[in-house]
Length: 498
Picture 1 (cartoon, rainbow, N blue to C red):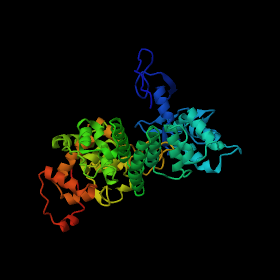
Picture 2 (spheres, helix red, strand yellow):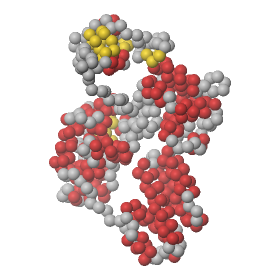
Picture 3 (cartoon, rainbow, N blue to C red):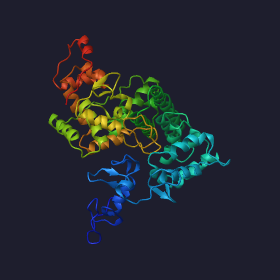
Picture 4 (tube, helix red, strand yellow):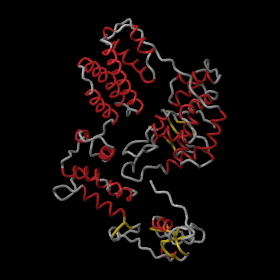
C-alpha cells in the first residue's frame, strides 16, 4: 500500500508546475519546476504519444493535457533500459524494473546444474514477466520467499503438495503453492478439502481419551470430509461449507467432553441430558445438532432421543426506500471503487449471495450481444443500464491482476492469492463499508423482485430454492401460487428493473 502524501509545505517549496502543490522539487522541465510526485508519475506513464504516435514513456503534456513523448515535449529524461532496450522506468544500473525482476527470479530459481530446472521454468517466466514488475521486486525481498524458491530449485523442497504441507503454515507457503498450481507445476486440488484434512489432524491430536478420539474421527471423516470431497467433485468447496464443517466438529468434541466430565458415554445419553445441553448452551453450541443426528443414525445414541431444531429467524431486511437510496449511490456516485460498486449492484439488483458472487467468472458475463447479460445459473439475465456499463467497465479493468498471482485469472472478482477469487468474508466487509449490508440488502431485493415475477422464474434464474422464492413472494404479498408453468417458461428471459 502506498504511503499517504504529506501535507504541502509552501514555506519551503514553490508550487509544482503540474499539480500546483508545494512539494519537494525533482526536476525543471520546459513547463517549470516539477515536484517529486509528478516526476515519478511522468516516468511511469506509458502509451502512444498524442502528437506523434510514438509508443513508450510519455512524460510530457500538451496544451490540452494529453500525454506526449520526450521528443515532442522537450523533456530530458533517461528511460532507456540497457537490458531490453525499451523505454520504461529504470530501477538501477540503467536497467528497468522488468529486467531486474527477471534477473532476480532466475538467480533464485537456478539449481545445482547452473540453470533453472525444467520443472520450474514456467514459474520463472510467470514471475519474471508479471505486469507490475516493481511489486515483484518488492515481494522477492522477503527472506522467507527467497528460502522457499532456493529450496525448490535445489531440490531440498520437493515439488509436491505433501512437501509444502510439511512446512510451517504461512501465507507465503500458500501463495507460492498457488503460483505452482497456476503454472501447472503442481496438480490442482481443492484447497479447502486439504485445509480441512490438515486442520482435522491437528484437532484430533488434542484429544487424549481414546473413545472420544475414535468417535470424533469417525464423525469428521465419514460425515464431513466425505461430504466435502463429494462437493469438490463438481465445484470447489465454499468457504462457508469449510467453516461450517470445522464448527460442527469442534462443537461435537465439546459435547463429547461435556458427557465425559459428567460420567456419561453416548449410549447412556437420555432426553434430559440433551435438554440440559441445549438449555445451558448459547451461540455456536447449538451446532451439535448435526452430530446428534449422525450419532442417532449410527445407533450410537438411543433411537428415542428427540433432537431440538433451531427456529429460523425472519430475515432482516432493508426498507425499499433504503434499497433505492443505496442503488442510486452505487449507480451515480463514484465514491467507492468500481469493483465494490459492481458487487453492491449484483446484490441490489439480483439478490445474489456473497458466496455465489465470488464464484462468478468472466464467462458468466456476456458483452457480445446488444444487451449486457449475466448468468447465475444456466439462464441468462439481462442487465439494465446504467449498471450494465459499470459491469462492462469492471470486466475490462478487473483489479488484482498486476502480479503473477492472477495475471490470466478467469474470476470476475480475482483475489490476491494465486488462482483464487476474493474471499466471501472480505466481500461482506466491503459491502458493509459501502452501506450495503449483504443479508439485509439481499432480503430487500428479493422482496422487490417477488412483486415483479413468479417465484419459479426467480428461483430458476437467480439460483435460489423454490421454497426461498415462495417465502419472499409471501412476504411481499404476491400471489403466484396458481401461475401457469408454461407461462413461466415463456417468460424465462425476464428483464430485471431498477
